[in-house]
Length: 287
Ligand code: 6GU
Image 1 (cartoon, rainbow, N blue to C red):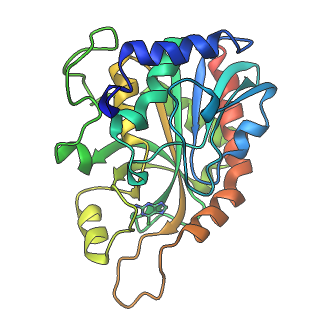
Image 2 (image 1 turned 60 degrees about the vertical axis):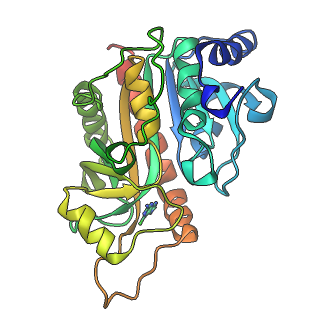
Image 3 (image 1 turned 135 degrees about the vertical axis):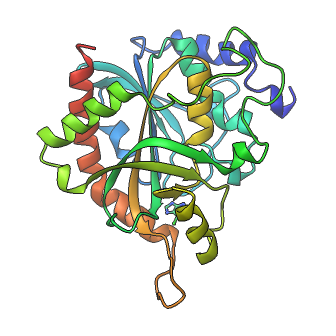
């Protein structure tokens, strides 16, 4: 198939059928693990893992900090599937490849998508190590004509013109905040707007100032295409950014964004994030 056909219904269904025949339980929740956050998949109970390279039609991931497998299991009693390693546009993948796993999750019967990522903080009140629940996003991609839904629409997934004003579900956001409070995490929990930048280069200072002026609180290189495709097929979405560094806003700053720092901070906060997601899933039992 042509690269843009990877996420066609038939191709996604072959991958979903292959997984369904091998996974013990139908997952209700899919979790995309961002940079340095893959350890979450290692704490699932009753795990079964599948390397991307063994799953029909699955792309390969290539970034350090991203392993490359799907892990099925339970977290706090909820059947989950975790993506340990995601696909980014900057690796050279088309947006249909980046979002292919989301459609596979939909066909597996997943109802809720939790996307996590590492992001640079633009909001001056944010600290390194803060957890930001995504309230909304700005897709410089989408505004510029690169949307994962571009091309023929298959109604079996969703409508031609899906609404995005409710992309990040308020009920999930409230439950996530409640969880943060109950765990004593409020001092480092925020809410804000995530802005997608294609990468792989980090932003210039002028670009950071621009994004801040546009109303973005954090900037990163992922998640938005997955969220758009998830909303298209009706999944409920929660987005979580870990602020791993402050975006450089001033010419007098000596700081430089770098991947090692991003990984170091995300590993530091990975455990808190695991606790938070696990606690939240406990609450989802009832809703
Ligand atoms: Cl500062 N920018 C982008 N685009 N992605 C990031 C980041 C910054 N920090 C972590 N991921």
